[in-house]
Amino acid sequence: MRKIILILFTFLTFFNNSSSQTIGLFQHDAGTYDNGYVLFAPISYTQTYLIDKCGKLVHSWASSYRPGLSAYLLQDGNLLRTGNLNNVNFNGGGRGGIIEKYNWNSNLIWSYTISSESECQHHDIKPLENGNILVIVWDKKTAAEAIAMGRNPAIIGQELWTEKIIELHPTGSGTADIVWQWNVWDNLIQDFDPSKPNYGIIADHPDKVNINFAGSGPTTDADWLHINSVDYNNEFNQVMLSVHDFSEIWIIDRDLDTNGKLVYRWGNPQVYQRGIASDQKLFAQHNAQWISAGYNNAGKILVFNNGLNRPGGNYSSIDIIEPPVDINGNYSIDPGMPYAPANTYWSYHDSIPSNFYGMNISGVQALNNGNFLICNGPSGEFFEIDSSKIKLWKYVNPVSNNGPLTQGSNPVQNSVFKTLFYSTDYSGFNGHTLIPGDPIELNPINYSCDLTTGIKSQTVLNEFKLYQNYPNPFNPVTNIEFGISEIGQPRRIVSLKVYNISGKEVAVIVNEVKPAGYYTNTFNGENLPSGIYFYTLTTGNFTSTKKMLLLK
Image (cartoon, rainbow, N blue to C red; front, side, top):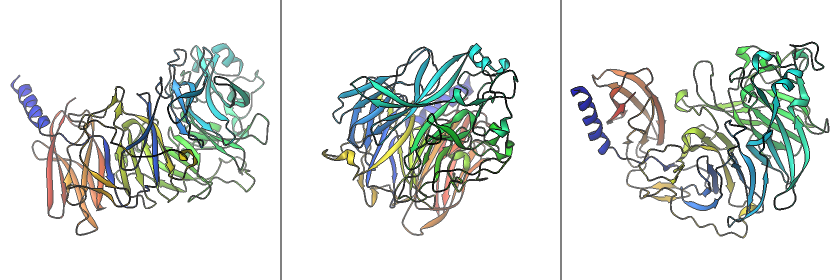
């Protein structure tokens, strides 16, 4: 009892003296791309927000629904967003069910529902230049229907959710025509039941989908594909899909077949039996997309590689892939071999890989100055890196299920599916006055921010700073942040280590040269017992130590 009281007393004393920033704008360094605004829709809340790079609220839209999951600002200034109708027939991650269009003043001007016992919109949509919308839809099949298509009865429950991509042409205020669709169900192959018409050799048909590939989920999981993003290439008339449970991206060509044909896939050639485990490069990825024309690496594929169950440990990366495609949109593949390339063209991960890990959701966007805007979805953290992989900007979503949080509170339930950056000359802003207001969070800290030179305050970049970890107490993961002064040497050797209460070193989080700026690192205490720990930042003559409490 005495030991418990001592730990609680130490924790309470520590907690009452450890308030610090937990949400909002953390970092804004020279080189971040300020010429625009960031759009995001917190998963747990019904508002969609537009902020500037100083973390100030510029505009917001209200809905009756939490997102399901994506939102886009259209070229006419309207907001296109998905909504979660809580369809009990599809209780899977990313479910939506309704697509809504709001004008600038949050007036609903169009909506369309795809939510029933047999189908449900989920995850992502893609607005097209002609005003149409590509939509990802779950399509439920019974176990009997799946078995009739060659599904092994040992790996099916009561039902199977296949996927279809539909193109909607909005008509009335609540109606739309389906002008095109592609169904996985029409493109199946299997080598289990020779009596079925789709029986064949999997490796001979990379343009088909193996209905018996179990994916990354449970073998009887109804949601066996879990497509989580859709993109469109207007030049080639092709659709790109991120297939989470296959750890693949697919490209569907709409010119080769009126219903579309699978012409390229990458990430996990085991799926079509042209590779082994070591050939897998994607791990439960999200937000696969073509890099826009006029940008660095235009035409290549950009993806947030979540890294779930990645060999060597879970960590995320931002990957660029250069597919083997000609000027006409044709993809080459050698007989018996997987689709090229064998490796990524470019990749970013943290210098300590486990410090950057988004287990699910998440996204990335290439900016036209060569930087990348990244959304670590589960933690609600947005950050920007330059082409040299230096972090320049960081913001933590300050909105939870009950709305904006108070500065200093633990940021729980603040997940975000992805972010989108729109430049100031985007046509959707024409005719609208964009005046930054206050930060979204309640009781914000005092800071001034210059969109060309960065944050200016008494503690930003003028001195070394070690912040209190958050959350605290923690179990088993917490975040530790520090700032390196821009005064003096431009780059410094930095050490961040963790010690137990006896003074024994238990972890090295950072031990490398760092330029001036703010840094966030994740510490995982899963292999350590409960108790008080100390973390120490050392650089040059500066040393700072803080306490944290691991409670399991």
